[in-house]
Image 1 (cartoon, rainbow over the protein chains, first blue to last red):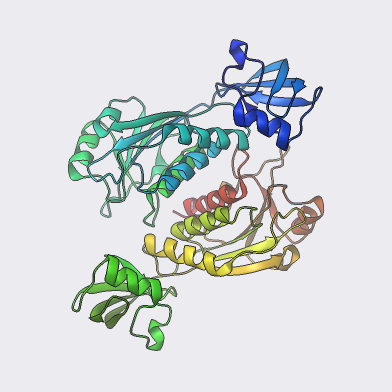
Image 2: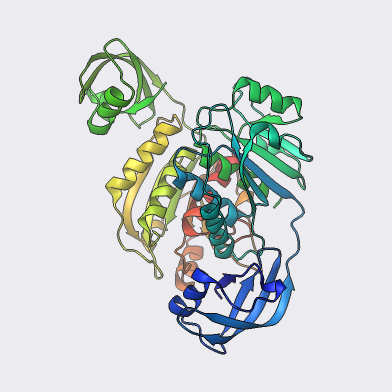
Length: 229
Length: 229
C-alpha cells in the first residue's frame, strides 16, 4: 500500500496537504472508503480510510495508530554541501531510504557552497522515507559551522584517508550513537582535522577508492547499518 | 593529479579525444611540459607529459606505464533499468566510483523500461572511474533477457525480500566472483525467482528497508566490497 505523509496527524489534522493530496486523488485515484497508510514522520504509522476525496483534497479517518520500535543505534552525518545541489538532493534521498536520524550541512575551509535549500532537501527526505516505508523523517539542519558539530556524545568519526594508517569505518562498534563527518571535494583542512581529533573524532577510511562527497555520505550510512544488521 | 581517459593509448594513440582534450586544455589549462595521468580503462595508468596543446587538442608522450593489480574478487550486477534514465545514470556513476567489473541491464516481466542509452551510461562510468582514480572501466551490457544472465559461474544472488527467511548479502563468502540480480520496482515475478533459484541463485536481502532499484544496486556493490575489505 502507498504511504502518505501528514506531520500534523497527531494534532488532529484529518486531510492530506498539497502534493500528498494530489498524489492520493489524481495519481492513486483514491476514493471514499479506500484504505490508505499515513506516517507522521515521528515514528507512527496510521491505518486510515478516505472519508471524502476531490481532485485537490483528501480527507480521512484513522482506523489504527501503530508505533514503530526505535533502532538500537542512531546515525548523524555532518556533510559539506557539494557545488551541485543535485548531488546533495540525491544524498538526502538515498540516506533517507537507508534510514538516518540526522543530517547537518557543515561549512568547511574548502567548502564549495555556503547555502543549501533546506525545504527542497526535506522534500527529498520525505520521498526517501515514504519510498522505503519508514515512519521517521530525518532531522535536517541548515549550514552549521564546522566547529559547531564537534561537541557531541557517542562514537565519532571523521572520514579522512590516511594512507599510512587506514582505519575502516566498518570496525566501529555496533549499537552506537554515531556521528560521521564527511568533507568537501577539497577535503578537510589540517586545522579542521586536528580540531576534530582533539574532540575525540577518529579518522576513518570508507574503502579503497576515492569517493565523491555524496557517495561517501551514502556509503558511511550504509556501513553503519551493516555492522548493526 | 587529474586523471584522463584514452582507451587506445596502448595502440599508439598519442592525444586526448573530444571532452577529455577540452577538459585538459580549457579547464585544467595544461600546457606543453605539464605532467598528466592517463588510464586506458583496462588496468593501466600512464604517466605522461604534454607535447603540444591547443584549445581543442592535447598531445602527449608517455613517461611510464604502471599496471594496477587485479582485485581478488569480481562484481557483476544485472539490474532492471528504472523508468527514469537519471536513476540508472546515477547508479552507473556510483558503482563505477566504488569499483565494479560488469553491469548488465536486464528485461524482466515487470520492467518499466526496455531500452537504455549505453553510450551515455559508459560516459557516466568513465566519470566515476576517473573520479575515484581507478584504471578499470566496467563492462556495460545493453538490455539482455532475464534468462540470458543466469548461466554464470561463481557466487550468485538474487535480491528478493523473503520476510520468512531473510538471508543477508553481507554473509556472502569473501573472494568470490559475484553476480547479483536486482529487480524492477514491481520486483521479480514468481517465475523469474523460481528460474533463478533453479540456476543456483540464492535469495538475499540487502537490509531492513525497501530500497529503490538504483539504491539496491549501489548498496549490493558496496556490501560485496565491505566483506572483502
